[in-house]
Length: 637
Ligand code: ADP
Image 1 (cartoon, rainbow, N blue to C red):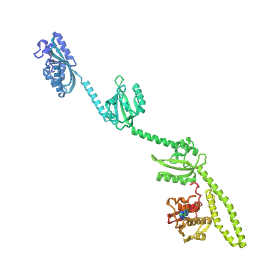
Image 2: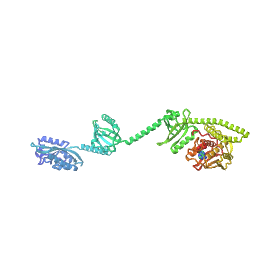
Image 3: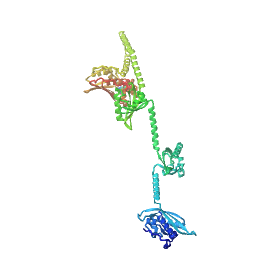
């Protein structure tokens, strides 16, 4: 609407001479030219030699809302974006001064919407025959779309660059041939290297020599095939000189034609992860070595079911891997009834302390045979419902023990026969000598009696132990007056040991059902020990007391005492306290074992209280009503 049709060539007002020159054609031709110029999608303009605008076509006027007159001189600058104004003026001046064709980019305001669009302004000087510039001819082409696309591309490239710089990983870009052309600061910092030392393929100098060939050939392969690149390698840290493990990854970026234009890559430090993997691998290797060892059976169980087991465990128990997979191995079912108490103890220990103290037991194997074993284990920390157990085949030791027991039993019997004959012969000789009145010789012969008694007791104990082992120790059930029994035993022992004074205190006015001979054995043993282990303390006390349910007899000495850690052990077979004061006293470690077995058999208990250097008190408690006969405790526990 602001556009005015340029007047016909002959009627150009002064100042529009340029347009007159430009359209100086025949009138009909001139009209065609005008129509053409107005139809062009670009703005078309003419400026004088000094650069002042003279003519703008219709597109310009329609777009900017400026009339030709308003655009004249420097009027067109009104349409230029204020931010571009200075540059637009300067660029235009420069072009004029240079007197050569020029190109400029700036934004023009749309007069209707007020929006600015980017235009490429191109100007060419028009010269006369002498080469003097007569005027400038120009066009402005709308490049808004390209410009915005370019700006967007630049903005997104910038965002990507910022992102790449912020990433903890190394980020890099290569050309299609793998030539590294961009890397972020982290990459350079790690190597402490100059750009020249990184660019292209130079960065490969930081690769670990052991990884070099593998990495290069993998990279060649991916470059050739366009497959995504992924590998791990070690890179040298320029600051500390050490190598760290990295995971390198790259993907190709393709152009519209599908050709690879770049590769985008990253390197992530996985040194810690590698280290953990290595530690894990080593510990797995060790665990596997343990599992594979044919020394120890290992199993993992959940409740009663064995979930996993090594070959040794399967071999020991006779089960197969198929049985294991089918869930047919149940350690509770493999536990003989007499070991039920130990099984319960296992569950208790696991619940309270998380592990099972190793103990001896037997397993019922698949074929029904028994396997003596030492078993221990612990709960797994990552799953407290699972238990890892260790099983050692104990049969060799058990066989040895059996042979030892057999030997002891045999030796006991073999020794007893000549001893009985010796005793008999001594009595016969003694009687004869008495008859002959050889009293002095009789007295000499009588000195043999004590060592013979000792020998008899020793052999008796040996035989008792072997009978207990095989469950053949006989017990008679008879009413026993405990008070009388205690006094008789005390008296006998007193007669035989003048070095000590045995005092009986309290009373046990009760009759219990038991084996008199075995009961005597208990107190004879305790009193002999009290005498043996208190060589310098002559007083030995027996103290009896009763309650409604039980009778308690204490045997107290003021001797050497028993170390705390050995107080429970002394009741075991053949156990003797290890310190020199104990070892100085002769003994075989059988007495307390036999005593314990008898007391247990009678439904009672035996304990000891002791203080080193002050003495010991053995406390025997027996029930007044003898409970139903108990089984012998298994020999192996
Ligand atoms: P031993 O034949 O060795 O005496 P026992 O079975 O009777 O065997 O006793 C086992 C161990 O218990 C002894 O070796 C000794 O170390 C310790 N012991 C037993 N009674 C006493 C006691 N009254 N005072 C100190 N130690 C004792």
